[in-house]
Each structure stands twice: as C-alpha cells, then as structure tokens.
Length: 120
Image 1: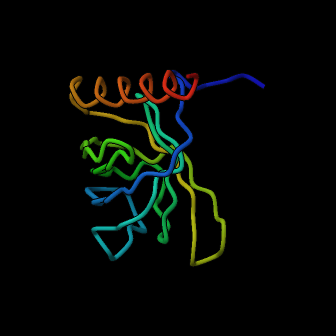
Image 2 (image 1 turned 60 degrees about the vertical axis):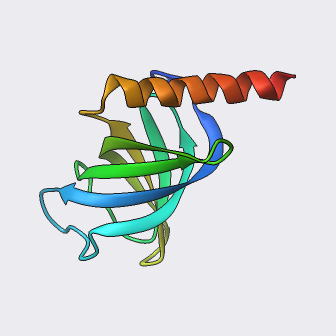
Image 3 (image 1 turned 90 degrees about the horizontal axis):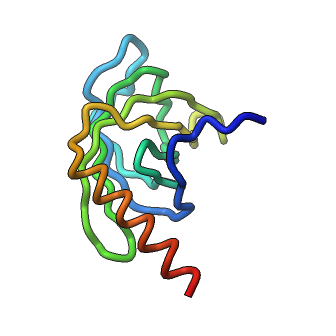
C-alpha cells in the first residue's frame, strides 16, 4: 500500500482542545471539544473525538505535548473520519493548514527528540 504521509508520526496520546472554526454542513453544536490525539506529525494528527467532525471542517487545535507539557496551537482540516462507536467515539485524520512554520518546527523537533530518546 502506498504511504501518503509526508512526515514521521509519533504514536503518543496528547491532550487536545479543538475549536470548530468552519465547515460546510452538519457541524457539531459544541464549538470547543476536549479530547486526545492518538498520533502526531509535523503535517497532521489523528485525533479521538466524541463528536462527528465532517470532512473539510476547519479546526483550531491546541495540542499539549505530554512529556514537555508545552501547548502548541495549529490549524487543521479534517481529511477523514471513522466511527468507533456510533454517537460516542470517532477518529479523525487532520492535515495541518495555515499554521505557522514555528509551530510546525516545534512539533517536528519534539518528534525527533522523542524518537531519539526512545532509541537510547
């Protein structure tokens, strides 16, 4: 199978606060959602959510990196959504868009640091 990912992913749960900014239709009534990321890369993340987030929904995501307790804010667009438990739990793939190069660099540096520290 062809790998579409642009950057290495770090499989680690981090707390995320998601603010729904815009979308086409069927947006959740809640605008701020507290959940977890399942993995993260410099180009996107996989999150677990308790609400359905339609494809192409634009989100502001505050990610609290677990080990260093640092919060990074990124913008993301929902690229795919998968139902885990109907009306209870979903997974969504996000692509980072309109995000500062500084925020992307911080995530990339954190992933490199974690991967190198796991090798030790």
